[in-house]
Amino acid sequence: MLDIAEELDRWVEQGREFAVATVVAVGGSAPRQPGAALAVDRDGTAIGSVSGGCVEGAVYELCEQALTDGAAVRERFGYSDEDAFAVGLTCGGVIDILVTPVRADDPAQAVFAAALAAAARGTAAALARITDGPGELLGRPLLVRPDGSYEGGLGGHPELDRTAAADARAMLDAGRTGPVTIGTDGSRCGRPITLLVESSVPPPRMIVFGAIDFASALVRAGKFLGYHVTLCDARPVFATKARFPEADELVVDWPHRYLSETEVDARTVLCVLTHDAKFDVPLLELALKLPVAYVGAMGSRRTHLERNDRLRDVGVTELELARLHSPIGLDLGARTPEETALSIAAEIVADRRGGSGVPLKGAHTPIHHEAGQPPTGVITSVA
Image (cartoon, one colour):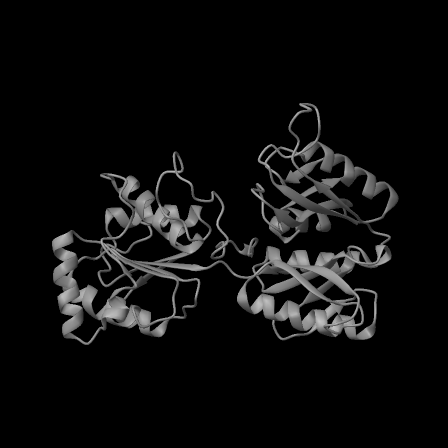
């Protein structure tokens, strides 16, 4: 549901009733991951997607029915092969869909509205819903804040909400979306129920160092991938809004000084495009010690070797150097700034998802990898 929070938040503000179909479990080569959602309002307007088109028509009808009868429902869609007119996935996977009505006469509407508002405004929050358990509890929501406070209720044993809130908070801290199984009485050994916890967190950061033409293209690529992009350069004449209109933030400062003072986390990616030793060495000396997701540096192979020697001279270890993606990017034969930005963005995605970077044609590797998290404001595989 939080996958399409901005649009649904507008629907709530407009007083529109709707039903939301959310992917709650997948198997095999499923097209979308848990948290992906499709919503339908009473006028028949639809937004979002749960399968990239394979089963949208059937899910649309489930949403209409849920709006009519006010009951949540879980449905499984699997592979359809011999019957060309059957509703199913062509990829060989399986997806479980939870359809939840959000109506004005439902006390849970206020909980859904608060969760959507938080996600739409970029505020960290987690929404937990029962996806497998007693029928009368299906779809019940619990909204959990970063401090552990919560609102709403799952409708079962009083301890159930407290246990679910603790687990959802842990998922939120990690920026993950996925299933959680606990007992209906809140214990770890009672009759099991399954929750889907959807985490909404602020977008991850991409910090681009070096106000060059390649940086302008990379800023655009970073925005496309859902990052909050900062451009940093020590030269005010180059780090301007006119040259980098898509950047969320422009910083005029020495790169290493800015990095030492700004906040980063395990989702942050650092792209060093300055390829100038007086900037690169102090910056990378610090960057390679930080718990960030990715550190890449631009330069020729000769520049890379010379820079590594300089980094060793200032005490950077071989283990730290092994974290450095340099020369930055995948081998696409890129020439232009845009092609180079695509090369860098592709490497960031491959590193985050555990991809090999080799062509899928002729390969025997999975198309979808389990490793890593997506960078969107709402983390949806996450799992």
